[in-house]
Image 1: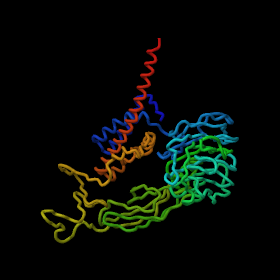
Image 2: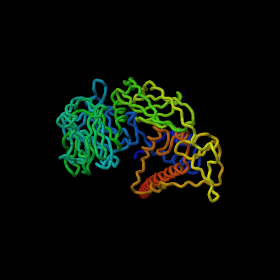
Image 3: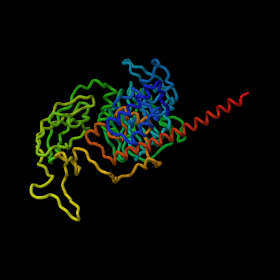
Image 4: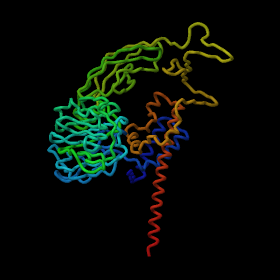
Length: 516
């Protein structure tokens, strides 16, 4: 891993302040948070980030490689000798053969694979070792000038279709081999291969899907997923010829602008957003159509809303819910939502709007008026409590200092509570799982990306979530301990690196001292 070199104290403090601000906003101030804050200060030196050549919509932790011709600074027709992963995840990328830079008339840059025995070699990084039938992943790329006749775009495999994964074009159709299955062609893509087209291959455990220019073309079932794996390099523009990781085969002979690999199955809205960012990020000014809102019922404290899916020229990515004209929630691409925390016997008015990836928002839907039910917390007659063996019990909800109990809870207190001790009994695992060998420890790069994009640590609720939902003591302490244990692993990694450096320095000193 390559470390960022911070040039001044202010750069260090800016990173520390991100973490410190998180604890201030969430109100967390205990031993766990203080240890976490101090430890993260020393870890920050190894955190690196994606470059601005990665589209903003693609800057997610699951992005494992982004190869882009726009990074090249040479002249048109110059030989490309160095390529850097713009996702800043993998290193040691090499150029095999003679790949040239093509600068188009519109100023866009492309990799030119004309000739034979040419490939961009990504090596065999663990983050790209996707196992067919087990891992979900996505491969996407933007083709350049010229309609490709045949050739490999991305492949980890050898001749004969014995691939761990890969995608190419054959006989004017997109062809894939995910674990060397029996079903390898996207039949519906026949005749759709063209220049400047954006392709996306989404692979799940039991199916694979093809998208072209952000639009879904075809999904194939379990017959498109095999089990073959190969101990060879991941290549762009070719595949290996032999199982000993030598040779080339089925080379691509046209132009390619960029390639991205993700360790997740991207959704349709994510694919459409990336395509829009790549091809014309500011051109979409058309708002989605207006959704139609209905009520599916209510209780004394909740209201269930549903709406028909809006449509958009690129794709709907989410919805906003408004209560009495004020924003209640911003959602993903769903069609139902339960509003909670309402007051019994109270009238409310709700509307919904649709959003797209460009930030366009539809007009408000029809207004739906709902009056919540009367309170169900108690009777109007005699005592609602019962007593047995000196224990008083009540089967309903209890509200103290307030008139409503949020859905899913038995008691709500608006005010302070004093007690000698609180014990939280968790039903889930305590975070010792972090120290197991199969634990998927996030990289520091992934943590920084998450902080930059979300403003808080992974798996830790945001300030807004804390403001709305509060803190569950057991769950929060479990999460904080998980972070402490993860940080312990990072520190141990740094310790091993420091030991190696100390040993190397000792050898150098010894060599210097032994010189006459």
